[in-house]
Length: 517
Ligand SMILES: Nc1ncnc2c1ncn2[C@@H]1O[C@H](COP(=O)(O)OP(=O)(O)O)[C@@H](O)[C@H]1O
Ligand SMILES: [Mg+2]
Image 1 (cartoon, rainbow, N blue to C red):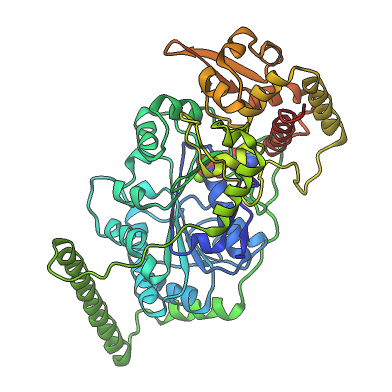
Image 2 (image 1 turned 120 degrees about the vertical axis):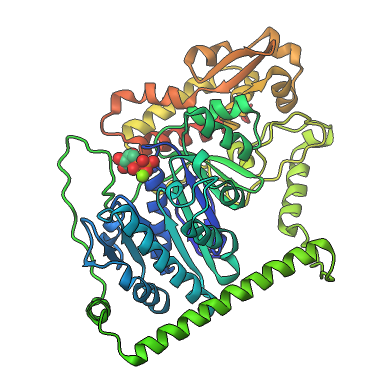
């Protein structure tokens, strides 16, 4: 059991999942990227995971509200102003003393930014080679530094961290509002992606290449995402999630009429500030020893570059078959999952008869397999170890809201079992749309029955929506719109996160109502 990361109640992630990863957070301006990144940083800081955040807009100094973070550079929340001459010392303090750093570049000119980052990132890279302990670098507006189709020294450096940092324990979190402009190699190597809303066709094309869905489906699902919602992608695991709101002050929030007061901030220890001040003053009066040390560091970094070239050439030679390659033992599937699958299939006689039953915890099931159930025969439903849709949120919803959810559930429970099963399946498998054939197979009833008796009651209530696609009727969940409309009278007390929580509670209730006789 690892250390859990509380990023979204829809997602089970552990700290270990992120070590050495390349994480990409994409989406248009205002879609919630910086919030998502901020939440991940909060979780890493909570576990004392060392990190640096390259902050272009001065959005992250608010992390100091809860955590001891050193904010350097030039900008609003900076506690010690530095330029590239101190970059190496700061990298060293951060990595060796485990001090989290926000590098605020908002007050730098473009070439000053480049100079700072080049010094800073190459220092981190070299230190990581020596120390080899976990460390993560977050980069906002990554398309500016790792643009597709352009070669720069800085890009080469960042791409190296993203693509080959793992061996040194280095991970990267790249954040960008221009998915199509981010270097393709970096994106394709990202093992974990948080895909927020995009609208431009070029960005949608990038998403289509990353996601396992058909183009039209991808477009439909992605354009329907609200602020804070995104599609989480990690290998075969594809789930739409809602990311919680940042606990610490988000200086990049969209301004509203409310007056926002910058909160009290924590300070890193005075000794660290003094060490940087000392480094700043020391610049310009180099002793002979300093000069020799610098020359030595330069030679070491040259030697390291040569080692990397040798490693790369060895890699190529290996691919060409000149060197014998040791093939690692394949890893075997998780035994725990297999036994769960068997238990599940025994509990549901539907599998034995060649048909899968309506899944009991459908959204959780989707977390493991998001592929539309085209061929239901013999499909075994593997339940996840925890069910994210269970109404077990620690935060309690207002009584009036709970009562309203119960009223809706009661109304639904009076409808026919056939309709409830259809509702349960479609709502549980949101956001994809399903044809009558697919629904019939998954709910264990003949297609003609649904054709003759479609779930009109739920269409009228607005819980479901349907439309004809390629000549076939398709149903999809309309729960998000329904919740926004039904619970509207409770606003403005309810924020986006509350509406999402209500949707998850209602979804879980409706999925269960499909199983009652
Ligand atoms: N999960 C969320 N829940 C509630 N509000 C959010 C959430 N994510 C973002 N917001 C709000 O939406 C606005 C835009 O979010 P932000 O993360 O700055 O977007 P981006 O970085 O994509 O431009 C901010 O005011 C932020 O506080
Ligand atoms: Mg942002």
